[in-house]
Amino acid sequence: MPRLLGIGITELTVRIVVLAKQVPDPETPPSQFKIDESTNSVIPPNGVPPVVNGFDLNAVEAALLLRDAGAEVEITVLSVGSDFVMDAMKKPLAMGADRLVLVDDSRLDNIDSAATVKVLAAAIEKDGHYDLILGGRQASDWDQAHVTLGLAEVLGLPLVSLVQKLELNGDSVSLQRVIPDGYQTITAPVPSVLTITNELGEPRYPNLRGIMQASRKKAETFSLADIGLSSDDLAPKLELKNLYIPESNKQVELIQGEDEADSGKKLALRLREEKLI
Amino acid sequence: MTSILVVAECDEQGEISQSTLQAIVAAKGLVDSVVTVVIAGEAPASASTLAVGKIVTLSSVDDADAGIYDQATAVISSLVESTSPEIVIFSKSDFGSVVGARMAFRSDSAFASDCIEISNAGDGVSVTRPVYGGSALAEFEIPTRPAIITLRAGVYEAGTETGLPLIEAFESDVNVERVVSVTGTVAEAREGVRLEDANFVVSGGRGLGGPEPFSVLADLANALGGAVGASRAACDAGWIDHSHQVGLTGKSVSPDVYIAIGISGASQHMAGCSSSRAIVAINKDGDSNIFKEARFGIVGDWEKALPSFLATVRELKA
Image 1 (tube, rainbow over the protein chains, first blue to last red):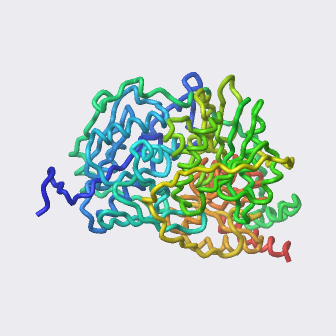
Image 2 (spheres, rainbow over the protein chains, first blue to last red):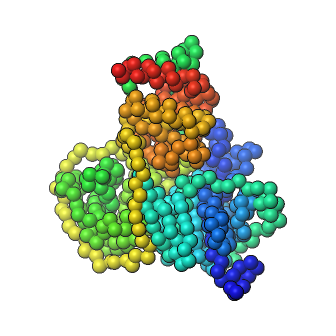
Image 3 (cartoon, chains in turn red, blue):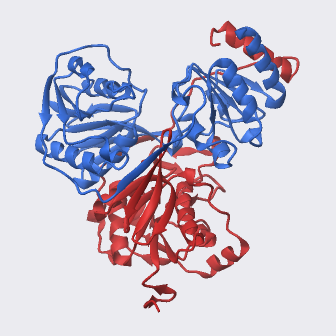
């Protein structure tokens, strides 16, 4: 009988931390994407709530696939920020994750990735034991694609990026890592840090039971002080000087024939005229 | 004098890659810059005429850790520590993205990825990078040194100048224990021309409605001697393999003509094709973003417009 370490947790349980970030909905129509140039920040569009970064949901899905494959896993979703919208942040719980841990502090609004890595590392140390740390390949707001990589460095853990498939084998994980014309097969030890890419497949939709369960769960929250950090630890390495929407001066030439079939023909002739085909 | 390290990569032919040549131009564009190029392994013959002052080869890095880059990260970190450059520039490639980020966090240095401009700013350096999937640009100042940067391909033009660099080897006794092991590589079969090299790309998106229409797109691509691309939505829906994905998280293409069919033109997609010579769009929705980026377009049903377009292309090519 495996030793019981907590409710539903035994020494055989594989503990997985999934990093998740709340971002403005990337499906926001471009016409509604606006920037306040006095504060260099994005103006939240009216009526479009934030979402969990889509790539992070790939990482949640990766953890759930390990459970589907028969592994005994505990999935903790960890996020750093402020002004969390619970309807958005509970989506991973509704998909099947077990816990939601938030480092929620107004000073964490608009911190850079160097500070984000420090906060994540401190929160993970504080929260305790883990076997795998999974992150999405990048966040759809700042597109930096390096928080998970940096976290591996700061925690001193092995790292594999762009994982599209994973399988647990006791003390190691077998992975497929995407490369331009195929994939590499890789074996990594546990614990390791992995970034999961969208080639893994679409994240599952929460079902009704999942949504009900998520609504009953409460997020566990830490303040900055709880994890032993202060404002001094959040100094940015990159100073944002200017955030703006680039101007486009392109003018499209619309081809209009008598009907769509005629337009298709005229388009080909026009491209030939321009020596493009 | 600003001392800059450019970390080189080689292409499939073993020559210094175009993106490295572009990074050298970006580095030399900075005021009072002294540029050193770092090459893992042996330097190819063409390196001896690069228009830079010095080339440093790293004999202790080879392809053995390709994809994991534990050894490359350790050796380049130790080179940076011993030579104290003010700026380190990588290409925004798989290698540059992983090694650059790991080096920066290992040494608690500043890191800016996927930059499209690098310039001097007082005592520091200023970079511009696309954010929010390309919907906005952000300009940052990096006050601390070294600043570690990855540069997007295609924004600087490779130079034609030649020079006579000093070539020296950096001997390092760093030998990391390999805790992660690559056990194999599986190449996926590819028909016809490589997407990244194609002069014509025919891409389909959500508006195609399913996997079947991609065969019509393939017919058009074949007629043009090009390749088939797709938006992330079409790939994630399983209509076509992810190896065809064009965009921020897929492949970057710069063909003569990029034909977007049923693609709305979200900025994440445009990030992968906006350097095409001409974008041609066919889409039902005249308000969609793709028409803001396209040079030619048809507002209408692709099912009606595409057959006559394909037939006319075939006649013109006959």
